[in-house]
Amino acid sequence: MISPEDRFWIVAEAVRGNAHRGYVIDWDQRRWYMVCGPKSLMPPEEEKEIGILQHYIDRLPENVHTINVDNDGALLSTNTEDDPTLIPYYPRYSDTPSLHECPTIRISQLTELDRLGPGVDLMSYVEDAASRKVVFKYSIIVQWMQQIWKEMHLVKSFRHPNLVPFDHVVVEDTDSRVLGFTTTYIPGGTLDQNRHRIFRFGWLQQLTSVIDYLNLDLGIVHQDVAPRNLLIDPTTDKLQLFDFDRSAPIGQVVSSRNDVTGVVFTLYEIITEDTHFRDIPFTEQDPHQVLSLEKWPVRCKLDRDVAQFRAHLNDWVKRRTGGRHVPDQAKGPSTPNMPPPSPMLECHSGTGEPIYVTGLPRTRSEALKQKKNVIIWERPPQQQSDCRCEDAFET
Image 1 (cartoon, rainbow, N blue to C red):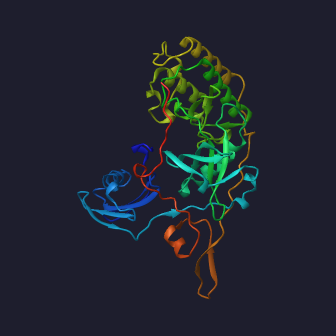
Image 2: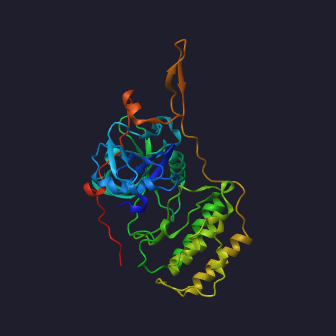
Image 3: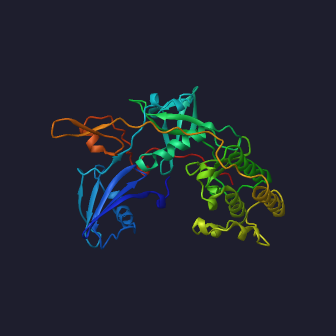
């Protein structure tokens, strides 16, 4: 289930005089809302719209898109006509030769089991008479389309035992438009979620090794190395790194977000369960504060003395910062540009000539009026649906 703090996201705000309008996405229902009210109740950039929508969300009919509130936040009215949903452009699979070597699966073949986060679902499909679980990653908003496109191309190129494997390109049923991709599902929870396991020295070695592979062999920086992005495959007992939506080529990375720093904080957080060194802006985070500590309070089970973990980390950090250097440019897989959308008719000139535009997001209501094929992402709240996750963490 999507956590309450991640369920809602403000896409945009509009202010005119004392009137404020917030455009909010409910990731659980994959539904757009407009929350309208006075600016005195919803000052810009304070995200008050989220609290107001949370208060009413379970009482709204499924066809409501707009709510209006008064100075005290009391509901004045709702509207079913003003649909604020913007629809992103999804390229046709036939126009994406860079994906043609990948297996595809239609979205209708996937069955939802759980909702893991915004744009991330646990799914299953039947293959060779057996059910297979996968993680489906996708975007329903324009802002994340390039991110998904780049991550899909990166993950499909990996061939490494400590990286979660690519599974399928997911396409829409009617026009075979590319919606996202699936990866193998690794049960048992992340190292942040499941802290009952004995953390093995070999997993640290695998982590430093896979970071070397990404940084030094491919010229790629993950930029979000953390316990929440690490899994342990129960069938192989190998550490698995995932979630490459923030990754970038070496030359495009802010120095303070390098992966060596990420590994330092990750090991410290796993062993001590103390995250305060990263509870500040990343530009202010200093790994030397962790490395220079005389003692690390051990709050998890380790298969070796903590001194051996720290010795390996220190040797690796020294080697990475003073020995083998990161390449100046990426040597790994390149990502082609996403195919552009076809021009859309905007209007006609004074002489009757058609005027076309490209690259502008369309509202769903406008596309439906033009009888375009529109992907409807909306779904019932999870508490009303049949999706569920049957896996439990081992203790």
